[in-house]
Image 1: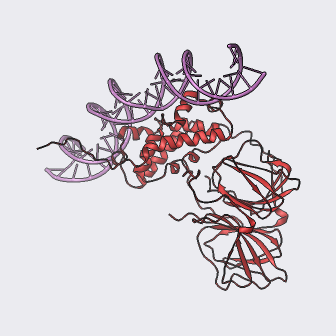
Image 2 (image 1 turned 90 degrees about the horizontal axis):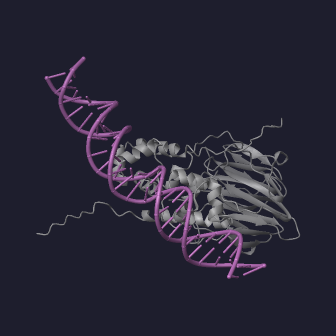
Image 3 (image 1 turned 90 degrees about the vertical axis):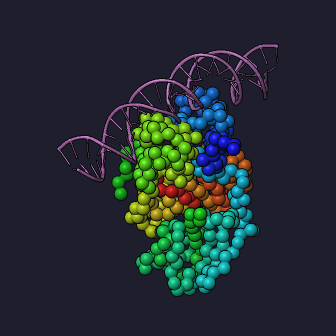
Length: 205
Length: 205
DNA sequence: ACAGTAGATTGAAGAAAATTAATTTATGGG
DNA sequence: CCCATAAATTAATTTTCTTCAATCTACTGT
């Protein structure tokens, strides 16, 4: 009988070993992005150059105290060092060209909706250009959904209803509200209205 | 309206000495919120009970490696330990009038920034109108902060730099990126540029 | 009330690591 | 080459981290 004294109780530390390296690379990236040398950052943060060198290479695991000093020296929040990396792997583009704009179909009448921001699979912060003809509206039933929205009237005017309250907006006026409050809009004027409309929605997990 | 002449001299060394304690209290709070004992968390995270006790009391400054294990044991992201708790206080207005727009002062040269959306104490989804004169720019050092931003060029053109990559934007072009990627902008053209700039930031405590 | 007991937390000393200061290697102009 | 700047290495010190013992708290039964 073979006695296997080695027991493997731990369920594999998933990618946790790499956290130091990920954080280190993030720090190095941020430092280089603003043209700082290790020595420069070290004096700004009150740390030694050797430590920063090791942290950036993933050899050393920085403590909260050190992270706080580094964040101060880099003028960022500590949490920025741990936010999911969006470095290069994401397929989301940064720029969208005017000729590539997507037109969104709506059941609303007399309304054209164009997505201005680069297309992404996950809805996040998006900007739309809404063109609302006279008598055009979002439809009979108010919208209720997640997220937050805001906008600016560029031309013309609209009537915005939020929680059954009416707001009359002219050129240059703006609005913002949580999207879970019932809302709808209407162009009661004689001129075509153009509105910059922005939406923010959390990524669905 | 009275002009508030109070000056904030310096954000000072914002609570850097207390970061360990703040993080510790956050961990303790999270642990107790799910009815875990130190021992329980220790075995789940693969750490000693004494260490967790010291971290929670602010006596010890946890390293990134330890933070990763704790976050795993608490089933949260590391950044959650540094993000301020968000709350929903809503006394904010829905509409802002064009005549009430607030102008924001910048150290950037040749740039005017106007807040279009209704003012709120907590920054959330905000829309700005940026007017960038020829040769105007965001300044020498790139910005790095939390949140996400997007925008549309209404008139003129700008050069946008994200992660040291250059994007040249003309009228109607748009952009979107996570604000923790180093970014800056510049108007290299001869015409004044006007850009709708939107920002979304989680509520800060 | 009083032991007794079990679970939870804290304290102390040695092992392991992070951190500093000093040195060495590498890189790039005049 | 020589000087200046940046990054990596080495050795000494400080701090974190673990193991284990001690203290504390809450509850049980008599």
